[in-house]
Amino acid sequence: MEQDLPVPSELRAALSLRVRVRVEPLSVLSVTPPCQVGFRSHTERAQLFAKPTGVKLLKQKSMRKSLFSFISVVLLYCCWTTHGEVFTSIGQMTDLIHTEKELVKSLREYIKAEESKLHAVKSWATKLDALTRLSTSDPEGYLAHPVNAYKLMKRLNTEWSELESLVLQNPSDGFISNMTTHRQYFPDAEDETGAAKALMRLQDTYQLDSEAFSKGKLPGVHSNAVLTVDDCFDMGKTAYNDADYYHAVLWFQQSLKQLDDGEEAVVSKADILDYLSYSVYQMGDLPRAIELTRRLVAIDPTHQRAGGNLRYFERLLFKQLDEQNQAYQPASEEPIQLGTYSRPKDHLPEREAYEALCRGEGLQMNDAKRSRLFCRYHDGNRNPRLLLKPVKEEDEWDSPHIVRYLDMLSDEEIEKIKEIAKPRLARATVRDPKTGVLTTANYRVSKSAWLEGEEDPVIERVNQRIQDITGLTVETAELLQVANYGVGGQYEPHFDFSRRPFDSNLKVDGNRLATFLNYKDEPDAFKRLGTGNRVATFLNYMSDVEAGGATVFPDFGASIWPRKGTAVFWYNLFKSGEGDYRTRHAACPVLVGSKWVSNKWIHERGQEFRRPCGLTEVD
Image (cartoon, rainbow, N blue to C red; front, side):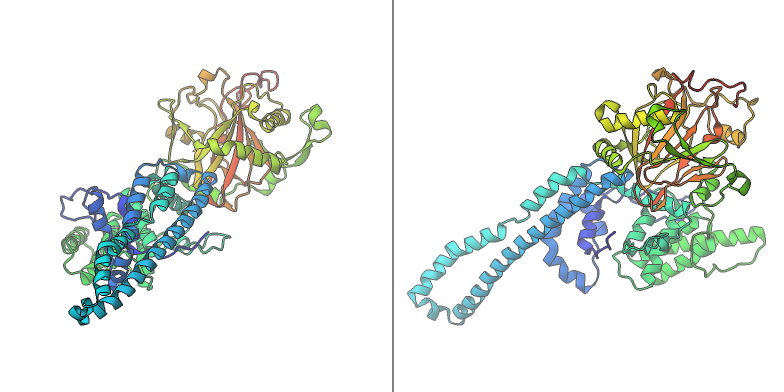
């Protein structure tokens, strides 16, 4: 990771033109949130964000004006004409690194051309400056010499025209052309927002405070990657614009802390306090909102909202204290940090258990259960292809039975699969439980591609190996799906099989009733395939992951960590065809690293004699 370089305010203004501004309705109770404006024109946006301060910036402005004028136009054009989804795949994001390197090279060529042009203009200026000092000291005496008179005519008629042409030359053409070539691959506002929300998701899942991200202090990682005051403020704005005041408070507080520690920034302390005080108010902390607003008024007594908001906050607080017959307590002097406010509940009932498993906490493994786990050589019921080289099989869990196969894929096979899949990666989709239609969702952040066996011998060989190991036919299985997880890539708890109406008579271990109440029935998602439900899942890990990225089963408290070249296998259905609701699982967010997996969903049809029905519904 690279350390951020300081960004001049004019360039920051150009880059900030696409920042989305949340339109907040005026409160009928007279409290006024920051940014009560709609989208502005390009010119107005530049005026809104381009506020260079200090003597240094004023001196730099004239020197950089021409450069930033065309950069802002180019960036605006390229950003408005690209598509999103870049942040959902680390594999595809690596291409942007090489693209940026090419653009830096092109930028340096542009700078060299500008410097060459400026050097030529300076040479003209130096020569003409000496000449005019001589001529203006005695104009008539100077022109009395016929050569001087001739050269004056020549300079004004010819040489000044040449100088004009030199000044009008535009060395930026090559750079703009390069930008135009690459702009179709640039991330857009959706990607920036998605990446920001991914950091917040990692922050929640792995219980990391904002400072940990700001200083690049992630578990097991030492990096120069840091977030500046302005970066933290922009993170807060992303949450604020989404009415996510919980995360907005954390990031505005971090921005304020770094500014108070002496870090330079474009954003002002008044702006940070403006957003922070309103966000704290939205979290219900009136004493702290009052304290922050008072700081804002002390910095900027003429602030358009601060005075009115302060009076409103104070009236509201004293009204509440009067109703509750309580005395006024000043705001806590402790800084806002992770845990100061309760995180709002969301759609996922097992959120806490799921995230604890992602952190390696709450595992239900014990000595008794561990004593039932074994490792063995597996020959696929004496399959001819496995007799001479059986696979190594390890039990990961006893009930439901989950096994891991070692050395399932070689490094060469993994690289070949990734090579085929990478150009075809597209945002992974989920099936809408109400309509049955495939759609993207925030709870699944990855890109995937589907590979047919006929495309390459490696794919055919992997498919055959899966069939040999499991003893199940892959003739009715889905294509091999390859997935790469992006920034904070995850897939929240889900079932691989299509659910049927709840059967209260079916007794199985696990929290099945809670699952039913929160996740309704869905249409038969696989009816059109004519191959039945997904009877089993075979999941290949094609990369190691430095931190995060586990496969977890919240219902019975298991975490399975990625190990390159290995695969895990489990049945989604009982032998009766009933769904095993204990197999609800999730792919934890990737904290550090790039996670590649491939999976094969094996269907019921064709397994009648390979996996016969049991005597009970839960066999």
